[in-house]
Structure formats: C-alpha cells, structure tokens
Image 1 (cartoon, rainbow, N blue to C red):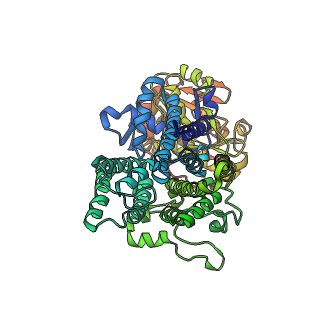
Image 2 (image 1 turned 135 degrees about the vertical axis):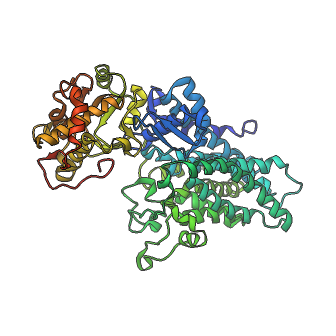
Image 3 (image 1 turned 30 degrees about the vertical axis):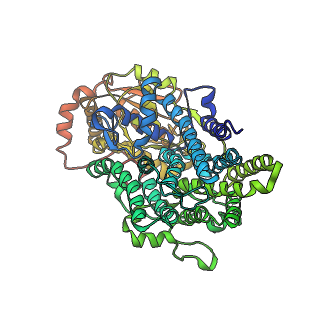
Length: 618
C-alpha cells in the first residue's frame, strides 16, 4: 500500500459516488440523489436556467422561460456547481449533467480528505487507513448520506472544505504534530486556501457564514506560536482572496430584483426532538421529521475516536472546533430539561454579528463540521496505530465499518434515492394538440400533494426541461403577471377551497362531480373573457395534472369556463386556447364590457366562506 497510499480513500470516495447515483448507475436518464418529494427537481431546474443564460447574465443569475410571458429571473446561490454542470449539460443534457455533478463531488471530497490526512498523519504507514476512516466519517455524515432526501445542491461545495483545511493547515505552518513547521510555505498555498474557501462560500450564503466562523476558530488555533506580524499576514491572505471571490456574487444578489426573501431575517429551525443535544450523542430519541435539518449529528464513534486521539496526542484543536460546530448546529436556544430556553453560542454570535440573524437553519454548519470530525478521527487512528501492531489495518477497517453504520442509521436510516425526471408520455401528446406558445399549468404551486399525502416539488419546472415549452409556473408559485386574471384567481380559489375543506379527499377524479359552480352570468363572462386574454399573452393552451391536489375541482372549473377538454388521458387534461369555441372570438369586446362593471366577481365554489388565497394558491 506504500506505493498507492491514496487508493483506500479513492475507493471509499467512489463508493459514496455510487451511493448517490443509485438507480442512475443502470439508467443515466434517471435523476440521481433526489426524489420527487425533495428539492432536487427545483435545484436541477435552477442549474439548468443559470447554465442557459451563463453567457448573457453570468453565473449568478438564472433566467428561464417560466412565469410566461415575462420570464423568471432570480439570483443563483450555488454558482460554483456550474463549473461541473454547465459543460456536462452541453454534452449530455440536464439529467445526465445532474448525475455527473453528483458523481464528481464525492470524489473531490475524498481527494480533499486524503490531502488532509497527509497533514494529520504524515506520510507514515498509517496514512492510507487514516485517510480511509476520514473519508467514511466526512462523506458518511448524515448531511451527505441523507442528501437525496432533500436534494439541496448548496451542500455539495461543502465537500471542498477538507481540501481547504489541508491547505490552510500547511499555510499556517503546522507540521503533522500541529507544531510550528520549519521553513516558509510557498505563497500559492495561501492563495489556494483562499480560493478553496471562496469556492465553498460560493455554494451559498449559509456555507459562507459557517465557513467564516469555523475558519476564524481553526485559524486562531493553528496560528499559535507564529510571530504576531507573520500571523496577521497568514490569516489575512486567504481571507482576502476568499472575499474577492464573493464580491461578484454579493453585487449580483444586491442588484437582483426579487431577491428580498433571501435578505429577510429568520429564526432558527426548532428541533423536532425534545432533547436534541442528548440525541446528538444517542442519549435520546432523534427527530422523526425534517431529517438532517432537525437532528444535528457528527457520529458518536467518530467523536469518541477523536477524543481518544486528542487525549493521547494533546492535539485538541480539531476536536474542539468540531464540537463547536455541533453546538452551533443546535441553534440559538437550548432545549434540555431545566435548562430549556438558555442561550447557546449561536445566540452570542448573533449579538456580536447581527447579520447572522438571517441564518434560519444553524444545523447546516455540520456539512462543514463533518470535515473537522474526520480530522479529529484521523488523529485517533494515528494514536492507535503504534498500539495495534499487526492488527492495525484490520482494526481500522472494522472501525470504519462501525462509523458508517453509526452515521448511516442515526438520526434516520439512509437509503439511496433516484427518480424518473421525465414528463409522462401523455403530457407530450397533450402538448401536440395545443397551439404554439406558453402553457398555463395547473394546479398552481411548486409543491403538489399526491394521493398518498406526500408532496412533490417543482413538478412543472422539471417537466419543462423535458417538454421544452414556456410555462406559467415559477419557482415560488404562479406567475406574478397572471395573478390578476380572473381564471387564475378562480383556479387558486378552487384549489385553496378544496384543500381547506377536504384536504384528504380532494385529489383526483373522484371529486370531479362533487364540485359544482354557482356564478352569475357576468362573473362567468368575465372569467371566460380574461381566459381568452391568455391567448393574446402568448399562451397556446392549458395543461392540468388531474391526479394532483385539487385536480377534480380544477377540472370542474375549467370545463365550466372553456367547455370539454381537447385531450384527456392518464390524468393529463388539456385545452387548446386556439380551438376553444365562442369565447375566444368575443374576448376583446367582452373584456372591455365586463371590466366596466362595478361588481367585482369571482367564481365561487360550492364550499363558500373559504379564505381568499394569496399568490401561489396556498
């Protein structure tokens, strides 16, 4: 193994890449590392939108043919992922590009952990096996093993953090025993530490904030013993380079219309477990909902191994900062018996740095803290190696397996995930019956409930990648420019009324006859007339997924307004705006007449008295 000390960590990295790919290993057109119930579809669509406009708008803007006809333009948070996704998209299409992205990042993470192991374990015989356990602890953290359940691509650049720590450790003149190294490291090491930190931060503002906090902690710990003037220079160079990387992203965010929601203060996510701090050490039941965002966990075996190594070697900085990350992950307020409500270090940081009030989910710091836990565990391997003798390799393999089982079963059992990211054949056939142009997509929303009660995210956005037509749907719900149209408002009313009154039974065709409309002649005329305005706005048809939430109620509404559909098969119902008889030809005169009415009317459902929905139909 002395000739290929990188081999065990490379094999482990390949194993995690295959885990993420799941069913895409057999069929590359299946979307890996996600499900229709996760945020993966929306993130795929966002990466596609940013890639399509990269030459025009740069990497920090995504502009696509959604919210038709105005289009949708939003800030791109995890722009660093485009370095892999964009060239793969040009060669293979969006779904395969997504799969390549999720195959590359675990390999990058394994490479970074190996470089970190060289700093921690040196080049001795323990190096290959320390690196192996480090990869298992870092990439096997629940944030990555459970990644497919949420599909948030902003976590992916966190896998570059081990490489950053390796470069920073060398730049701050630490040797393999964490003492002050002799000689002066080349400047490229400091620049590399800054560039890698900037790349991590370009994964999103959460990673930027958390990386800054952890880097301050490790920087102060690792620069001890260095003369004051040199210490300031060594800390300043990586920080300056990283800030320079963030300037274009910050400018794009500030000047991007519609990004105000990214700059609104939030509150730390409350934990589902009554005692999350105890659950972090398997001393209480874990959270049962929310997966990794609800129960912070670094692995009790990894922390125990790190504590053992720190005790024997007196190298406490790795474990100390990993524990800091674990405490920060519990948010601003403690939930633990008689101490319930006590302030945690995250609250103190918010007082010192008020912009941290914008952090909503502190548990995400563990996507970076996993690398520090891996470093601490590797110190434990080095400490054990000389004591294990000829049993060293076998013992480390067993410890690696136990760490994987520990982190793969807590707070929730991890399973690989993948899903079909194509629109059904019936949707393609329905579009063939429509006139060219945009498609009004119903139900309205980015999260639609299925008959089993689960929600699928960004359905229309993922279908758009396959169908290739502009859609009315946007990232957060219905298009703003359609919100005033009576047909869209009536559809939102139908959907909200159905959900509010009979949420568990308002799915699919069984409700088709249950929802009746009662509307005055002028009200129905207005809805018909403004529906015709969709034609002049560049829409060619209406597409309804009837087997989604409120599908039956929406069908009843659309049939009352536009007559029978031109296409109805396998839960897909469509109307061709050009071919709907009568109201389209009369639309200009009817719109002018009805808008002069003093009465403002909307289509009411048989369940009267329901609330008026806001934008998006919630």
